[in-house]
Image (cartoon, rainbow, N blue to C red; front, side, top):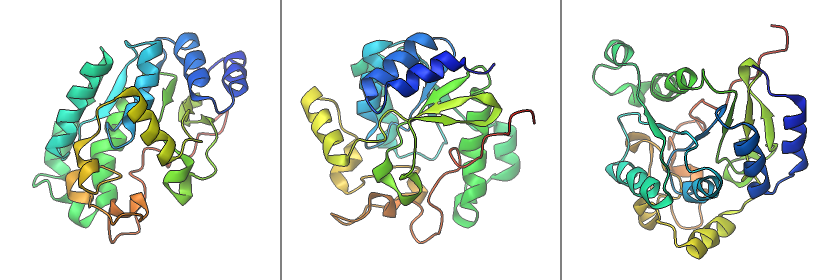
Length: 234
């Protein structure tokens, strides 16, 4: 089902005010929208803003089976602190996992295939009941994200919302402090951007936060945000 034009218009009228965007989205699209969160270094602000409006909103977490233990513990702690009541762990299909990555080493020689198996495909399956999803992407995170809009078309007539696109790392850090939110423990050990353990490294102070993701490879995205929306009528 496509999102009504009047709802899209309301979302766009909210501009880049994250709270206003989320308020429209989580009230007008209740039951049709989910938050997708990595429970990473900067996830707390988005989840806190969403929880203030609707703590029962579905939150989708890609449990790849290769996360740092600290991330799994943080997922539990942050959900508890914010009162999020519907956090869903999305696992890779076990049959496909056994067939395509029986030794759990696919990341080492084909990271794109690993991300497809452990992230893209589980999210595609989980998103079937939803018409919209909320991401935590920011324009400052990478060159590939500098042109992000707040409201973005997605495959199948769905939309993606990026309420925090205009926030800087300094603003996010200040908001986490102001709200006294738990911090991901790896941020204190030089990990400003956190993904799966085999493909994430600490970075030097002041370096590009994304340098620690897939270090030494041309890869910059896991793949869940890289697909083009289908053309209308196709």
